[in-house]
Length: 506
Image (cartoon, rainbow, N blue to C red; front, top):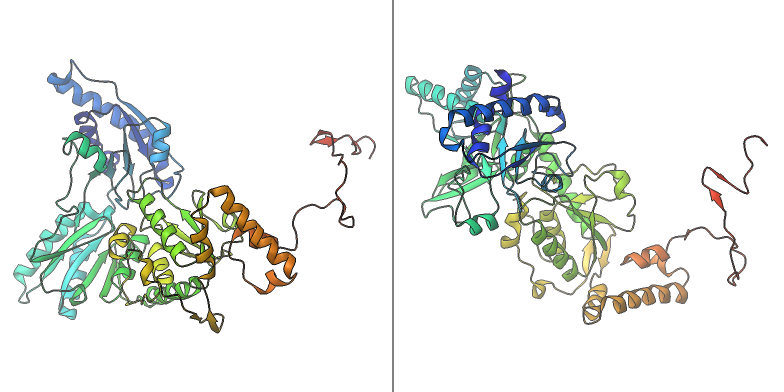
């Protein structure tokens, strides 16, 4: 019974039976993979039971196939559409912690889990915070505790009714339990029966309220009120979702209740220092000439638009961009691209903040890239994690880019960023092959004109960077400037070439 409750077997089986899909990919994170076989068995038994009791569907019921997915291509909080499409799945059932990011190709159904929490202790801490703070409280929580929120709200209303003090609480709601791409909705002319959608869409909000959403939660404030006027009470662990809350609402007073340890945390100086570290990376990115755009998702809706937006932003800033797709980034992978001064990680909000201390080059978010590469941009303290919110709020306009020297805090002087921009505009009128030839020719001229030019001048593109390296590969005869008429290589198998001694001779 605990397994069926934690994995919402009844609700999931009902969703499968009501949908018109026949191939379902069940996506499990690593920590829940041990339960996958039992979940599949329980789902099959429940589906058979529902179909036997539903006499109307017995005649036209279709065979349902379930596939278990593990080791996701990117972050486990996102729907792995790439892996699901490999199994030719029609729909993804996502288990565990989720960012609830909208999908781009496949429909998805979310099973968030049921983490345990003490209702009485949580209500007691909430009441004490309301008494000591005097502010209205917005209650946010990890999605694994969403099942307990109605009980917390009911118990809190009872305490407020019996108390002499007037408590004001606003509870955030889960945005949705399933999602379906917009292009499928347009094709079908509306949401299919088993899919639910929160009232919040692109047109959400009224003249008397302002809507906020983060980490799969959504809530509204009355007109004239700001988030800084409220105390944020977070129920859950110190994970990526909570880090997003601290960064996004860094001007608010925040309190976290940890249900596992059953205690209240009020000191977030470490998180606020982290915000200053991100500002340091923004200043460092301004001096970058070669930028790598890391594709951290192939499923979140709008990721292609964001990549094109980043390319346009970098080009207008007079810098060179390279797009890299490599799954989950790590120091070893990114070390293969030493020419990149900095990387921009395009991914969902809960995987965008990479700790790049061990990386050769820092990794920043699209929001930080816009601050770094948009001339005249000032950090007001606001922080945006969702890249879907950036495009409309920060359009790239070339006319705003002032072509004048910029002061670099790291180099201790004024630098010029726009010499490459003029070359790139000229190359846009040529085909790709001719543009590459011109770039190589420019790099060779720099090397031949002054042997030390590339050691004193920062490389602005990949060819320039590799020409500045002291090692260019294996040289058989470095002392002879003339090309060899022919080169005899090794023959035989890699385990033992013909010119090598065998084990018997050694």
